[in-house]
Each structure stands twice: as structure tokens, then as C-alpha cells.
Amino acid sequence: MRYRTQAVAYPYFVVALLLYGLQMVFGILSITKYLGPDPLMGLLPFDISKEIHTNVLIVWVLTGFMGATYWLVPEESRTELHSVRLAYLQLGLWTIAGVTAVVSYLFHWTEGNKLLEQPQPVKFAIVIVMLMFLYNVGMTIWKARRLTTTEGVLVAGLALAALLYLPALLTFDNYTLSIYYRWWTVHLWVEGVWEMIQGGLLAYLLIRLSGADREVMEKWLYVIVGLTFIAGILGTAHHYFWIGVPSYWLFIGGFFSALEPLAFLGMAIYAYTAMRRSGLAHPNRLALHWTIGSAIFSALGAGILGLAHTWPSVNKWTHGTMITAMHGHMAFFGAYVMIVLAMITYAAPGLFGHDQESTESPAGVWAFWLQMAGMFGMTMAFAAAGIGQTYLERILGLGYLETQHKIQVHFLMVLGTGTLFTLGVALYLYDFFFLAPKRRPAPAAWPPAPEAQG
Image 1 (cartoon, rainbow, N blue to C red):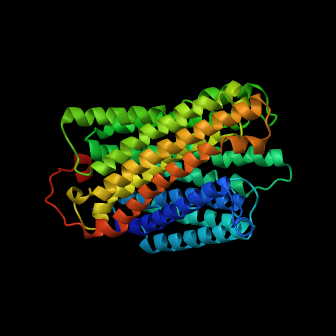
Image 2: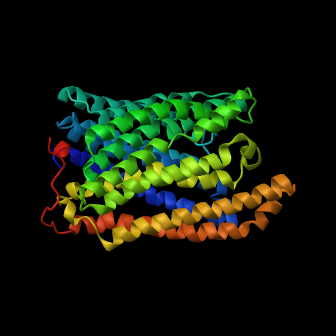
């Protein structure tokens, strides 16, 4: 850790990981409810547990993004953070807003807009938090008079994410209009500007972990920004297929949605090739695993599996089935969960006063591979369930409940692989909270890249 104020990232990572664990609790709870019988149906029905599961995911990933930014920006700008007090105040308000939202779901106080269910006062609190965050980061960069391409793309992605949250404040009596404008936030976040955030974090990590040249990595970032604005924005149309928009959106939405993750995979391949050719091997291998894995899993989940069912001629059959869950789980995990875990894994030695040699533990390795195996298994189980559901409901014309009964075996597979994944998450939390702080520093063996030395 080169700058004292980078330590602000630690409480953000703590809150993010605790929420990650809470998300797993509600995920396992939701799938057991889906299988039934459900003794908690009157107290905590499935729609509420699923609502908490998905919303906590968004909150903890955003918390991780904030922590990662507070770690990255001082190092890239070569200066201390503008205001530590403001960063802690922001985290406090953010945590209160998140807890309030979860409690409000339990008491059915929601906006009723899928993925944007937060009550209106909570939404205004989120806007205030984002303004505080962007002000703090912006003043840090302004004070340093130094802005690298890597942090520029990251901060631009965060600023646009805040801007694109504003449509979530709008309410409509017409449900179709509500759905239409909802995607201005949801899609343009997760398949648009969040990709810029991932790109900035990915470039930062690859430069430091692989020995790749900064100039070449940052040229890839320009490609990412271009694809984000072309493919990400136009790809929003794959949510418009069946709500009455003009038919030309069918081709635009199907084609451009498949282009979004290609730049990330290309950047990861280049970095891995550069690392192999240079003969360098960063001792923090777990951070490198999470980093390369993020690019690969996002290309598989968002790219290949997205293309598998967002093409209009396919989506007319698969829309609203478990095929969507297949695509969504691997895409979100690969693109955003893994990059946050990569940043936490990379920053942890500095936060605990260790060097990069003292990072790897059997628990950390098992945490990585169990989450990989668990997510791959869940994706395949959702795929099998979705294919069966599509055939039984859309082709044979069976009713929804009868279909769900016939594909129940696949949800047993989801439960099994989800439990495996949750075990991996538990090991990651155990490693971060209990093992990592106690590791003995080892002699440094990795010379920092020239860019990192400043």
C-alpha cells in the first residue's frame, strides 16, 4: 500500500463481502422454496427472498466498485485521497440505505419495478451517496492534476452509472412504459457503463499482475469504450423485442448484444500471452486467477450464452424461461463479481501490511475453484431446466405448474451446485477475515512494474 488513505478501501471490502455472504443465504433459501414445501411462505414468500437475493447482489458489487476505486485512484493519481471522513460518511449512509431497502422488502414496501424495487426515499439516498463518492474521487484527481487512461475509464463508468440511475426515479402508471425505461438503468448499467468499470479495473490488474505494457493495455480500453457505447447502448434493444417497439430493433438488439464482451477476452489473452513470453510470474497468483477468470467467464456468460438466447428467432421461445437465469448467473458472476474479488485479493496484502508473497492459502485456492465449479454447475443446471421448460411450455403447450413439476430434478441440481458455490464463498470470507490478517510477511520476490513504482 503506497498511500495511507488507500486503507479506506478496507471497510468497503468488509461491507461488500458480508453482503456477498447474505446474498448466498437468500439464494439458497430461494431455491429451497422453489422446490418446496415452504414452511416460511406466510412470513417470507419466494418473491421477497428472490428480490433480496438479486438486490443485495447489486448493492454489494457497487460497494466493491467503490472500495476498488478508493484503492486505485490514489495510486494512479499519485496522491492521497481528498477526504477520508467523507468516504466513511458515504459508506455509513450507503449501508443504512441498503439495510433500509432489505427491511422494506420484508414488509412489502417497494416500488414494484423489477430490480429497481427500492423505495423512493432510498433511491434519493443512493443518488446522494453517488454524488459524495464522485466528488471525493474527482477532487482527488483534480488535486493531483494527473489522470491516467485506466482511472479515466473507471471514473467515467462510475459517473455514467450514477447518471443512468436517474431514470429509476421516474414512475409510470403504464406498465409497458415502466419496463421500457427500466432498461435505461438496468441494461445500460450491467451491459453498458459497468463494462467500462470492469475494463478499468481489469486493465489496472493486468498491468500489475502480468507485466503487460501500460500503453498497449490502455489502447485496449479505448476499444472497450467504443464497444460499450456501440454494442452496449444498441444492445438494449434485446429487452424491447416483445413490448411493441418497431421491428428493426429485433436485428439491432440481437447482433450488438453479442459483441459486448469481446474486447475483455482479447485484453486478457494479450496479457496472459505477454506474461508467458516475459517469463514473469507474479506471486499473487490468486488475484491473477480471478482477473483472467473474469474476462473468460464474462465472455462465456455475457457473450456466448447471451447470444444463445437473445437472437430474436430464439428468444421468442426462450423469453421468460430459466434460459435467462442461465445467462444471467454466469454473465454477472464473470463480469462483476469476479473482478471485485480480484481487486480485493490483490489489495488484501497491502491492507494487512503484508507483501504479495504471503497471499496464497489452501482456503483461498479452494474458494476460487469451488466458486468456479459451482457457478459452472448452476449454469448448466439452469440451461437444462430452461431447455426443458421451453420445449414443454412453448412447444407442447403444457401449463406452467405442470412444467415446473417435470423439471424439478434440474432444480435439485441447482441446489447441489449452489451449495458447492456457497461453500466457496464461505471459504473466501473465512480466508479474508481470519486467515489473511494473520499471515506472516514473506521476503519480497516480485519487482513492481515501472508504472507501479511511479
